[in-house]
Length: 328
View 1 (cartoon, helix red, strand yellow):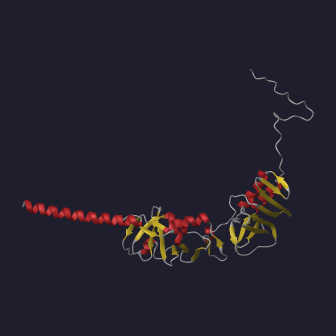
View 2 (cartoon, rainbow, N blue to C red; view 1 turned 135 degrees about the vertical axis):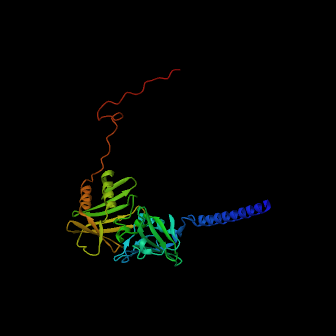
View 3 (cartoon, one colour; view 1 turned 90 degrees about the horizontal axis):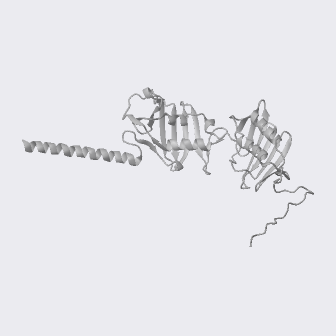
């Protein structure tokens, strides 16, 4: 009897060891691909390989995000909009390597219960090899911090962070760069500006700012540059551009990259047009008023007064020479 008991115990131990081995093996395989057996990675792509993301909102609104040969992104609307780099980086990091939070069901029956019979958000992610991964996002869970999700071709139902849905569930303009200029925080080499019926040629050379041939106070000119850098649209328009009343040409610090934009007045707003971009930017009149104010505040450079402790007034006797004699 003892021998039989020992045999049964040994057999059970061997079975348990086998189960643990294959369980650990499964966990290791899942970890290698990202995620765990309970919360696997459901999309695993290299973000640099992603060339296009097509989003379908509420089964009706289509948004195409397309990577250009330059590496920049554009929103394939009519008219085409330039993609905003920070927004696109967030989208790419979200959809290229996506971990689930948990598996809800291996084969769900009623998809409508999770908002996935007609998903409110779908995202088809295409890579440079022509392959596409399709993410389906349904309703949020009752707690609201997670969203029910599936991947086309995979029968499993998952939850993912609700952040995934909010990152993708946006109107097309929210993916676009609304800035009129892209010269960034480097000081441009030259700015040609026409505003309020006057023209200004602003140049930056070394540490000197000039308007025309006149050396200018650096702070006052830099305030103008900052206002030009900040010019942005509140939204986009397809038509409405009229006679330009503001014109700006910016030559970047490299001396080669040139951006040119014009703005016309339209009611209480301005319509901006940037060369090379088909979209029109609707700009608040307060931004143009602010720019004109700072243009009017530009002032010439005034050298600092000489140091009083070392200066000698005209006609005043020179300070006495040092008569100290060193000790022998």
